[in-house]
Length: 106
Image 1: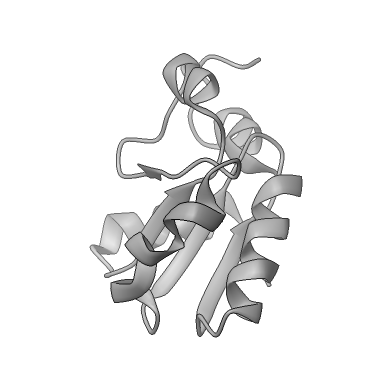
Image 2: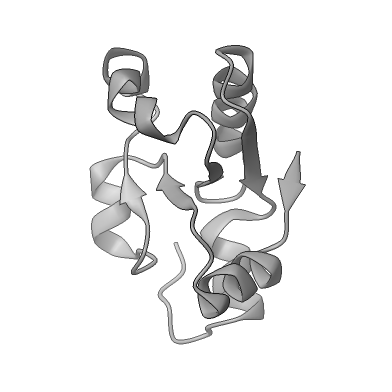
């Protein structure tokens, strides 16, 4: 159910087709973000889940700050029948530590 930040970066570098979904809130997204991530905050995802319908069979990687919220969202989406959902272990904070130390940490 989890994928490492390094594996996500490999997918991006290869140009794999997948949705990188940021489930943090807008203020967190403004502090630091991954270029390819689409913001859909956990606080509104229930009302806007229809926006993800076209990704039902596509790989989805959800990320948050440390990995807790993204795991909740990944489990919830899987429960709704989304087929290939993973949570990015350690979130954007782990990405910053392991892959891009120029990213601000909070």
